[in-house]
Structure formats: C-alpha cells, structure tokens
Image (cartoon, rainbow, N blue to C red; front, side):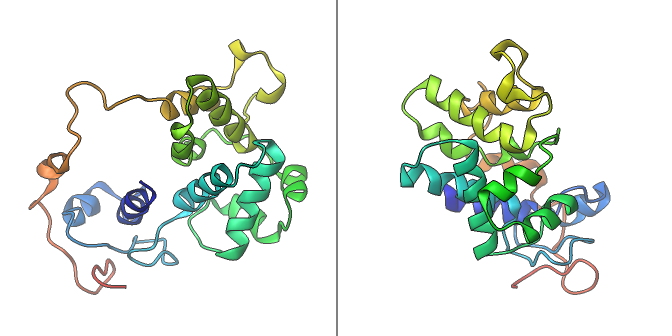
Amino acid sequence: MLVELAVGDAYGAAFEYAPAPVVAEHNDVTDYCRHPTHAGIAPGDYTDDTQMTLALAELLVEGAEWTPLTVASKFVEVFQRDPRVGYASRFQGFLQVTRTGPDFLAGIRPDSDKSGAAMRVSPVGLLPTVDLVREYAAAQARVTHDTRAGSRRPRRRRSPCTTATTKWAHCPQWPRGSPTGPEWTGPGRGRARSARGGRWPCGPR
C-alpha cells in the first residue's frame, strides 16, 4: 500500500496547482515529470504527503502510545533523517529548525485548513475497530489542523478538517460505481505527449 501511495504521489506531484493546459499536455500516465515551479522535487521523488504517511505508519508498527507528542516526534524524526521539499513554505521552514517533538508542539500553529491531515492518514485505516480509526485519525489531525482547538472541544464541535480526515480514514470502499482498477486512467491516456527537456522535462531522474 505504501509503495503504491508513494508512486502515485510522485506522479501527481508534477501536476499540483499546475495550469490546466500543462496538465492536459503532460498527464499521459507514461512517465514522471518535473513541476514547472517546484524545481526541488525531482521527477520520481515522493513529497511531504508520503513522508508524513510513513511517519504515521512507523508509529503504528512501533506500537507506541498515540499522543500529540509521539505523533509530533515522529514527524520531526522522519523529516530530519530525510529532509525534502514539498511542504508548505512556512511549515518547511519550521521543520528545518525543529529538533524534538516538544519543540514541535511548542512552536506549531495548528491552524491549517488544507488537506494535509487527510493526505497522510491512510495507515490508521488498518486499525481493527471503527472507534480506533476515528480516534487515531482525529488525534493526528489535531497536531497540525486543529482549526478550532479540537483537542479541548466536545466531539460534536470537531473542526471541519478533523471531521473530514476521520471520514476519509474510515472510508470502507470506493463509492459505488467508481472504477477501482487501471481503467480510471482511460479518459486521460493518449491525450498528451511526454516532454523531453525544456521547461517541463519528463523522463528518468
């Protein structure tokens, strides 16, 4: 699961926030590409989404207590052992100067309303009960996406980010009628050619 996630992340990294014409020209599912503005992400490199997913997966495998401190400490650990670009600029700078979990919790502004907490949450879907999935998903989301002080509010007032993340982690199957195999790529295949060199070089790293 993690390998496939990393492959998809590395492929999609070239197209995040890219202009629609650029996506239409290069999204042919034949090669990795370089993003037109994020030069630090080489074709084939996974991004922050996979790195933070790996952090949560490692924490689960280690059997450590699932707390804001252990989650924050693991985020710091995986970044410091393998620094990479792709994070939001403010968060990237924060990670570069943060050395411990306590430092992370003391310095973080957990007010993001973006999708990062949901992008990294997939490992908790392997937990054996629905309640555990919800608990772990919400707990890791609050570390960075606690837009309404979620750790201190009643369940019914959980932040939108936390709510969306817990639902995503617990999604039991693809929505009925959605393609689950390679056929989902059909509409985009053959509609674009791979670029070689220039502003959008595709091909081997």
